[in-house]
Length: 93
Image 1 (cartoon, rainbow, N blue to C red):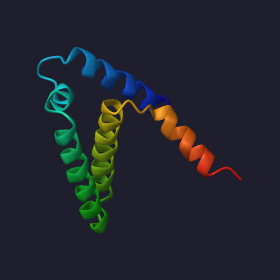
Image 2 (image 1 turned 180 degrees about the vertical axis):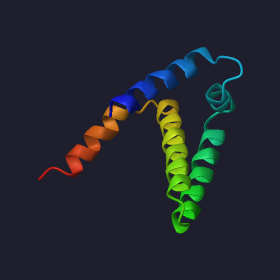
Image 3 (image 1 turned 60 degrees about the horizontal axis):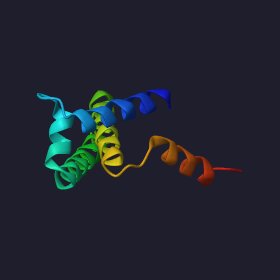
Image 4 (image 1 turned 90 degrees about the horizontal axis):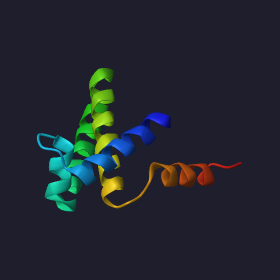
């Protein structure tokens, strides 16, 4: 979970600073609709890759989806910690 927290911090900085020539900054500049479009595209690519036999492709597409979900989370001010807590709560025995 540590890397996801670090990525969240990077994304927060990108949103705040909006550096030039940054794909992530471009997503934040274009707003929620663009971010949601990318989440949808990546989800579709995960579905397609799941039907193929190429594990490397599937890992790549899942990584893209998780990245774009984290961009969405930063856009909506939802921390990775909240997600972790929700999952922990759901799976307590």
